[in-house]
Image 1 (cartoon, rainbow, N blue to C red):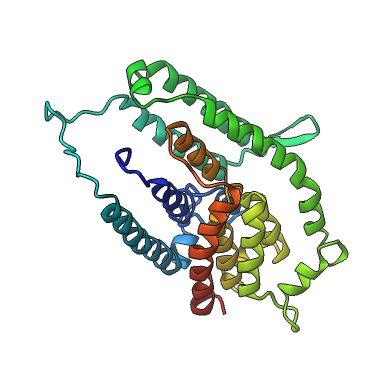
Image 2: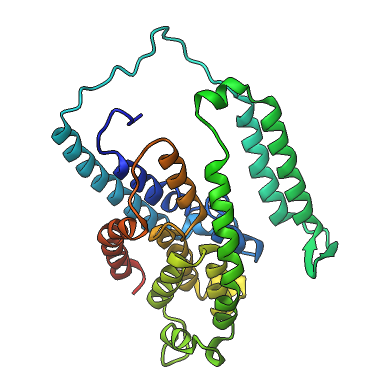
Length: 314
């Protein structure tokens, strides 16, 4: 849609900000941290009821900033508007079977969080529930069906290839291997190397501080993967979903918002960030470097997060 533009990297950057992160903040299907909370017992619609204002503020502000930046670039470039109407005026969807398969993906994810058969298998020293194995087997079946049923022309016309997914898989395999000691130090609480972090998120009365949880979970989510980071701070705040959804609702809202929103602060805060970057580069978009992207996030996102803290997480 923007390949006739000389400056289009900002389109992808804001896509990462809004679609890959902030846009998934309202249900467990939208972002991995919230799905882990759902598996821990947080109600499916809890985040919809508790962080809608924050989400609307962030997404609305980002859209307004994007329009201003995009308009400025568009006028500087003097681009002639392309006619978006195809010659034959037909409307059609190629590979429409994937719409049904996407619904199947959502159903499988929900199944793994609601179906509790109580059957567990141990694989390579790790306990896996039957619901987890059924979900993963179902996702593999859905993938196979998509590959078999989607017309080859549809993938060819979309310039689909596996390179971006391979790049992200390799990088996040490394991240998940090296994240283990960091998470262990966080889980050690006041007795571990991150005792100052634990002290910073707890008030003199022993109660958790929502603003501190928002920033601590968010900053760590920026450079570690945001899903395990959410889980660490969920447990640090007590780990009881019933207490966190009621008495400590401001704390759970802060952890949810921090983990999801601040996953956009760097390319490695959330796997879709890297996926989008890799796809864009594969299509010829010159994306900023790791620190170049962070210049955008620090300049645009961090001030918005500061405002959110003053309004909602004090």
